[in-house]
Length: 312
Image (cartoon, rainbow, N blue to C red; front, side, top):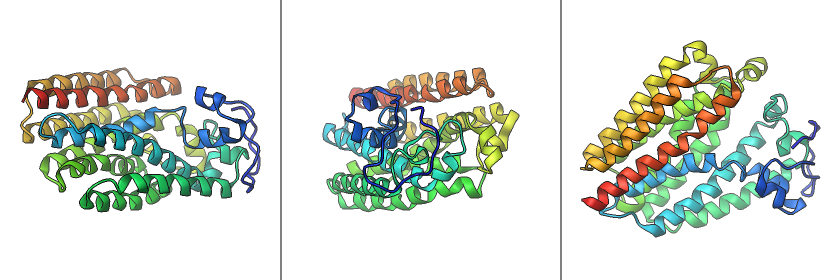
């Protein structure tokens, strides 16, 4: 998108961005392009980072192989709820987004879509998310519904703390608990350790992500761990990722997983080390590239759990 910032309108049929930035947005009908952009359908890494803790929880709680129905439900749920989260975040942050180079061409700050239209879209996504949640057991439904309090609070954290990344970790990794609960109908210590590991993981990758916007954030008064840590970020990344690896190892041990899990965990630890060692803090393109490799962390950990369970 290359439209210049303008005052957002309120109409449901506001003009879409003039130039689409991704394949899905380019192929979408003109009237739907702003909604594709609002839900970040052309940026799937956010869906994967939300989905992997869900998949980990399902696989870790399974007797053998994970339930493919649950995997499919959660995949769809992650896509819908990530879109809902992005839409809500954009509604709340539209004035900040208009003042940041990377975000000023989003549908709301650019004027391509109105606030009323975004609210209607958000309601539709939340309704779809509720329909998916209701397919689960009662404990999982209550647990999933509780996450709405976190989702609603998250956009405001950058206004009050330098650690919104920690709150994102608490929110984004709720799926580790939900996935476990969807299989078992309750919670147990392996799920708790998985959740804690996910929070530490998010602290690492979202701090990397936040370094893209640190100059704009400092100018407009938005807080982040990137600003809090600054040039000292690298040793903290080692700490965050070290805690993530330790938490995953503990969850695997409590669940009685065998060597394939630790092989997958070793691959994840190698990715953590590579990110922390080679990250160029003042290069936004490198920060984004390193951030995106965390999708592979999810892959290797999930594969390790599944193979370990399959081999018994």
